[in-house]
Length: 298
Image (cartoon, rainbow, N blue to C red; front, side, top):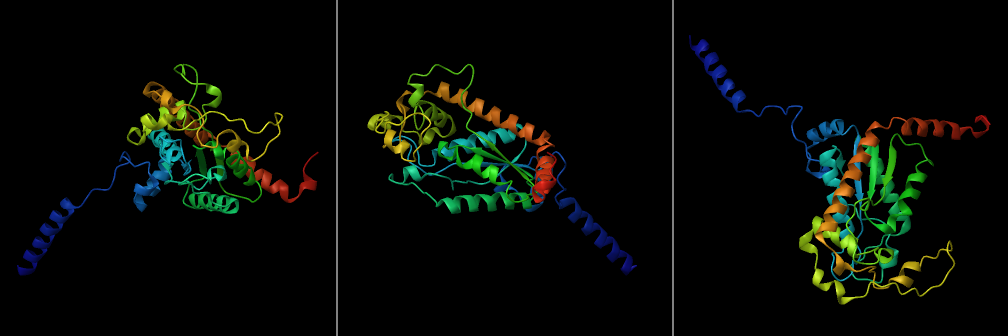
């Protein structure tokens, strides 16, 4: 009788504990798109839901005129990437600002890493992302100074075999139906009307529009070279204030258009990358053929 009573009490206690225990997450459980917000167990589910597709929003730390924050490129690209990942699920890597910005070293707050470190850190980052299941890494660029660096990095993936594919997506804020600009589009390149408008949507609390006219964003055109001839000092020769355009002309209307265009463009890229079954296959075929180039059919 005593033994039976103990068994009944234990069973009753167990039933209470079982009722209080959290139920396992259902397949429809909402998963954060932020890599750093996921638990280890949720990360595994997130990789499956993302079909191995991860975003690496790529910004920088540099001056943005007198009216925008140093991390403006990173803030804007992360805003676009995080919103796109909500539309088409993907995992978004934490803040990454280790890019090319030598042309702004004369301005306060700039952090410019050496060229070797930039490439090594980016390679190890994408390698680690892939080791954790990100077999399709989309680097979403938010900084014009990376326009040469990132395609070069993607090209160098052919040097050594990898079991994942790197994609590079450029800045894509403009398009058909864009509101009319108030400033000259030819010099609207850095902290000008377009970028400032985007920032008014992504981080309006960090935009100081009243300061936009404190410095000139005009092209000073101090070096005269024929088209097609490049020199690294070109940006400083044209825009020594590290400001190109007219930030004071920015409007929230333009910013909302640019934000929507960029977000939709990233979401479309995520869908395309998820559907891409050829890049990795061709990449592996290339690796094999590159071992024995004389056997490649001619």
